[in-house]
Length: 207
Image (cartoon, rainbow, N blue to C red; front, side, top):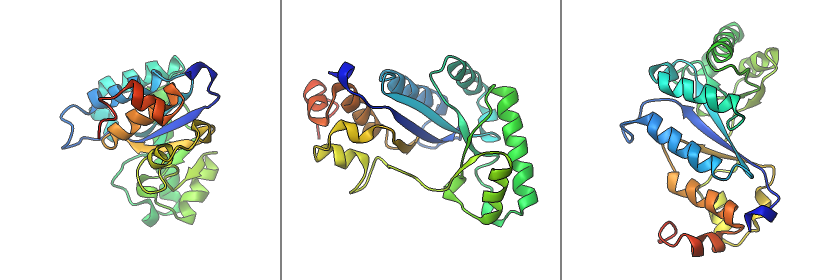
């Protein structure tokens, strides 16, 4: 059924890549999620939001993202220079310096110039917006179309919303969280509906 579905979904994946107490091998988990997404590559594209300081602890991940981006299977964007920075307290000058360093790092090490700044913790401030504008970055300080919640993507699909409602939207998630929800959404996209996916993947949807 998936061959007749006309949808294209961006999967924004935040915090790439930080350490996690839940995942002893963050890169292994991140790459697993990427494989899930490219299994539905006719309809979905992986958009990892990069933390340019933290990811340097995972050189294998850097090379992996570089290769997948070059192959067109991934669209890396910017999350921040460092996750722990509260950009709401930074001056315009400081924001510009951080963005310049982060963008430069991505160009040099991943071969990609980011076009979006998905701010850490959805931070928002006029200084941040002005700095993003200077570097021609789309400024995103919110999570759109989250997987979980009463009005989240999963619940809407459970409530029999047609899969086409996903066309053109961006799903927000974190690589360290909501893996089962994301996997189910991916299968629903591949199968054409939540119901059909649950029939074809009984163990995955068994709850």
